[in-house]
Amino acid sequence: MPEIYYIDGYNLLHSKPEWSALADEDLEAAREAVVEAVNRWTQTRGGRACVFFDGQGRRHERIAHDPGRPAVEVVYTSSHLSADSLIERGVYTAEKRYNVIVVTADRGIRDFCLGLGALSMTPDHFIAGLSGPTTARPPSRPGKSVGSVEDLLDEDSARHLRELRDRIEDQD
Image (cartoon, rainbow, N blue to C red; front, side, top):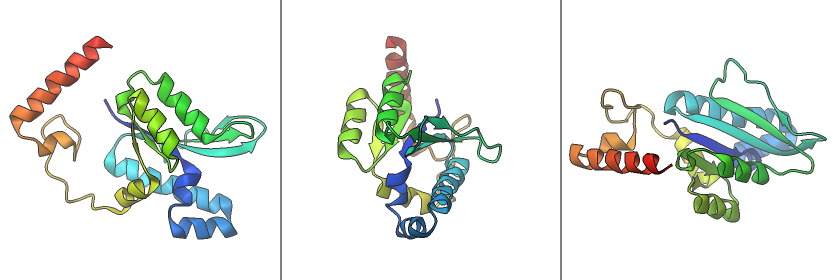
């Protein structure tokens, strides 16, 4: 199953000096730069992403899917909600939490989501992946996504992990 990334947009924005400097001049342009970088990343890496931005108005607002960004959803929270609370809710309600990766600078949110069974990473780690090489991936096995961890394993280890995954899914 493909991964979904729940990203605290402002944490990501303020973790890259260029975006942070742009935000001082034009916050909307900085948010757009973040979303576009995430979009390019999903196109090369696969998976989906939901980028949450804190407290923009009176009501919670999901931006309609942009045909040019089919794997990226942007959510502006209402002024009384935080990106953190929506990320927590998303992980809590996820059917398969082990497919969720949370990107936030907030250690408490990362720990909470890890406790629920999701994975997490810091914005700095995610940003490093944005600029990392995308062409140096090992060739993938037939039917597998390019650059998956499975590609790096010997056949016995890959078979063992598939069996373990199947047992976990059967318990759900």
